[in-house]
Length: 415
Image: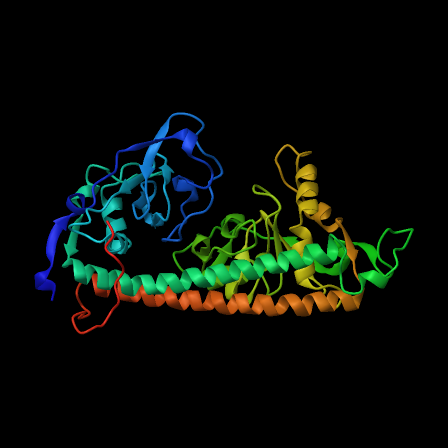
C-alpha cells in the first residue's frame, strides 16, 4: 500500500499562513501564544493576556498551530475557531486538494516532526525551530481517501478523550458548587432547622478551629538538588505548582521525574493519597487533592503538604476550603506583606476553619467521593486511550496497517 504514497514537502501541502488579524478582534479566549498551548499535544488553555494594539497572525478553524519555542514540548493544536496568535506560533493552512487537515495534524504530531524541528533549532536555553527549514519536512502522503481513513481512526480516540474531559470538568464543577451551597451559602442538609450560635455566628454545633489542629502534619517538599541529585526522563512523579491547574486538576505531562532512591531519600516531600497540596510560593494558593493516580510522588519546597486527620475532617472539605474565593483573597493579602510573595507553614497552619458537625462532614464526604472516584476512572480511561492512539499513530502513518479492508467512516472533506 505504501507504494501508492507520495513523498512531499510540508510546504507543498500546508504552507505558512501570513494573513493578519487586528488586535481589537482578540481576547483571552481566541488569542494563542506558546504560553497557553499545552505540552505533548494537550490542547490549549485561556490566555492570560491578549494584545491591545497592532496585529497578529490570523488562524481559522482547522488550521494547524505549532509552537516554535522549545519544540521538544510538542505543542501542536488544530484550531476549532477563528483567532490570532503570537509570533512564537506558526500557522499552517492545508491545501484541501492535496491533503486532509486532520491527517496533516496527526502526521505532525509524530515525534519525528519535533525531532526535525529540534535538529534545525537555534539557541540553547530557549531553542526555536528554523522557520525556513520546517517547510522542507518530508511527509509520506497517501491518497486523500486513505488520509481521511487514518484521520477518522485517530479522531475517534481524541473524541472519546475530549468527552471524558468534559465529564471530568462537569463533575468537578458540581463538587465545587456543592461546597459553596453547603458551606458558603450555608444551605447544608437540615439548615432550615439548625439555629445559629450568637457567640460564634456559626450553626449550632459548629466551631472555629486552626487548620493545624485538624492535621497529622503540615510540611513542604524538597528538591533533588538538596541531595545533589538530578531529574530524569522517566521515574517517580515530581509535582510542582505548575503541575496542576487553578481548578486542582493534575497535568501529568508537566510532571518532572526522579529515581526510586531519590524518592525514598526525600522523605519530607513524599506524598500520600488524600494529601491536600497548596502552592505557597510563586503561583500562590493553587490547591489539589492527591489521588492514587499521582502516586508514588514527591513535591518541591514551593508546595505545602497538608496531611489531615481524617477522623476529624474530610480531605475534600479542606481541599475546597483552601481553594475558596475567601481563602484565595486571604492568602494573597498575607503574601503581599512579604518581599517575595509566599506564605509559610506557620501561617498556613493558623488559618481558621469552620468545622461543621461530624454528620454534615460525613454527608459531604460521601457525596463527593463518588464524583471523585468517577473522575479517577475517566482519567485512567483517557490514559489508556492516549496510549492506544499513540501506538496506532506511527503505524498508520507508515503504512504498517492495511487500511484497504477496513470499513472506516470518514469525515467530510476539509481543507
